[in-house]
Image (cartoon, rainbow, N blue to C red; front, side):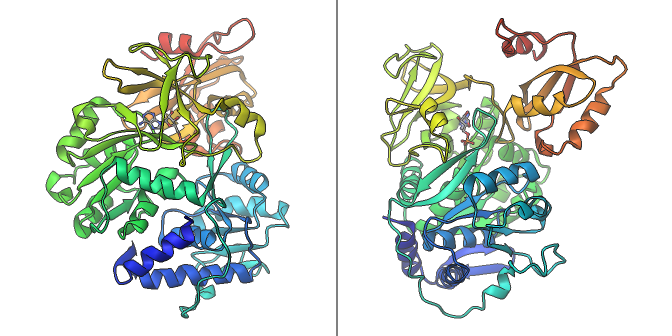
Length: 515
Ligand code: AMP
């Protein structure tokens, strides 16, 4: 099954129901399907053909899901990315994916302005908010989305699309620091929807109203929130900027039934002064994923939001590999998901070296799953490193309890997850080392109630008069490091602990300084 067919079936079945609500705009399935098809036809006229990659640099809004679906419908490959990415990151996405075109908005325009002159092969740039002043206006390859769409009734684009075709390329910063593209076929996307819906007790034709706070460039945002709503006849409410007060009002006004979020989202919602259980009483199911959540917070969500508060453990590569319904009863526990076989093995060992309950090991996930990827985009060496003997080695540390449930305990490597986003120490360290007065540095993630983790930087300086404020200013202006990756804490120390081969001993920093 491919998404083009699945979407058509859904839209025919639910024709008069509301598919997408964005602010004051409400689209029925029938009307929205026409919009998707109209954009699909436009893309074909712009020369988009099967397998072409197109960057989608948009916040969560109707136009984002419109672009993502239209690209699937014409057999192209949608490449959504974090709108907060700076020029060097977007440059990497353009180069690595070989993009044939881009969708953008005000928030993503500046980075693209910096980068696009280097990519003459990029044939079109479509603004979804073209009415404002825009630096690209007048460029021969500039288009305004709403001018391209006239609202005419159109036919489904004629492209042939099959289950095995790749429809989506999601970038994950993973564990190496350099983003890795995870290509996903139409079939993998459909199985991701089915698996999640089954694990988490969703049923068909049940007036799902799903709020889209998880970003669409994350698998949970695209598959868990958006596609699960659309393939189950539900309604998707994209939220471009997460403002907890507004989200509470939207949940109340629109009687939202399903909320998928990161631990940070739930923390911000429940701690907001406007939050009361009454205002969110319509929420039947809520799901958190992406990072560990403090057990007290899990219990609070179960008590104040919904008892159907589900824990999802997943990743871009294999998706909803672990879950626990009613997470409040056993915070942080997970069991393997519908399409998954999961093991915990000795770090550095093979898939057969399964550890005994209570012992920490590395979580590995069988690649014999219809939800799983088959390898990174353009990265055979990286693929071979993490995909071995039919298993995906996650790099996550975990342990079983006596019942066979498992718990994530940290990272085998040192990736920091802040607000649900991955930050690799190396990218922050490389930026810090460019300061003329810093001679050595190492960063770690330290626990933070609001963000899950924040970056803490240890620096060794040659100028004793340098202040932390100056270092922070330097990092804020650093062109290679996205602003949200910068350290929130600093400490000047005498030397960075390293082993004989020069590798930073981060655990020593953690033990000594992060309490
Ligand atoms: P991503 O591919 O960006 O979704 O990141 C996947 C990584 O996020 C996993 O390998 C874990 O390190 C982390 N992660 C995802 N879900 C959880 C969870 N429920 N608890 C702890 N860590 C998680």
